[in-house]
Length: 341
Image (cartoon, rainbow, N blue to C red; front, side):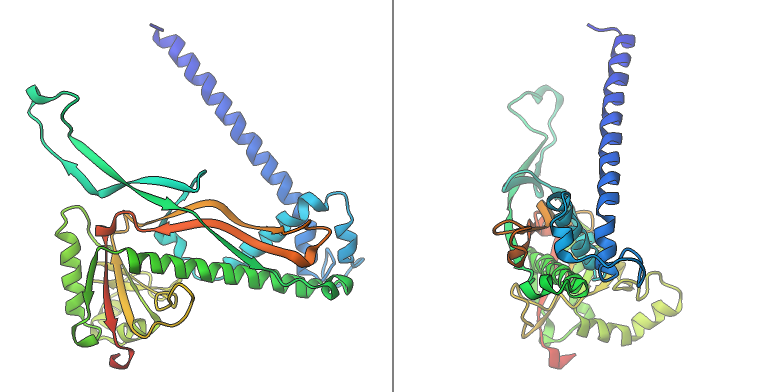
């Protein structure tokens, strides 16, 4: 058996190796960001590195450069992701998990079985905690960018930038809708609104149902824009706001209601295809056990042919899935009639 000094030396060597790998990755990322910076500036300044100054580059000139095959797709990716940052980010209400397989299994705390075992009984045939798992399968999402030949011929950098921005917005909207639908469809606890109207009594009952599991305690509540408007007008909400509650009207957050962080979002009232639902709903969940956002491939730009030879056939693509694994950590109140708001 190795003595403590040898083990310590081995650990220090492994730590040094990992540190060197991290530093190398950070250096490569920094170099890549510096390399794509000119392309990002040209997208921002209509083909120039400085607004209205210096030589204006043609799109075809950039396409024919030696670095184009490597740098142009990365620059497009960066522009799309930057645009997406301007929209509400509901991904923060999930647990983002990079995966390397189409189907991944995650432990399901809800189904955890516990038994207390007296010490003489402890052996491999007895268990103290046993978990079940839930599978999450990746889906592919693609969108044509709509870059046409005249855009390239006329070297219309502004239009190219706007198209990439629009793709970023569209992909993010789809992501936000999918996240909300994962909670609506994946919640274990469901209840129909009393009288098809928004009612604080229903919310209180749903809180109790989730707490009754002895495992979860709701901390976040999602409401659509119409219900959010009603809550802002309620005396209970205004009293809380008056006495200095935090996070009022910041990035979609309203304030605390029954100890819940209130998040108003326009994406809750949309179905999977983006159409407005005929009724409204309210969702609450335990923030310690959010939906799993499994990401196999982030938003990337590629072509059905060759990106440089056929820029007009460029698509944006991502591979991801969102699923509520611990379904008893979430509840949904459905069938709220908009006319009753």
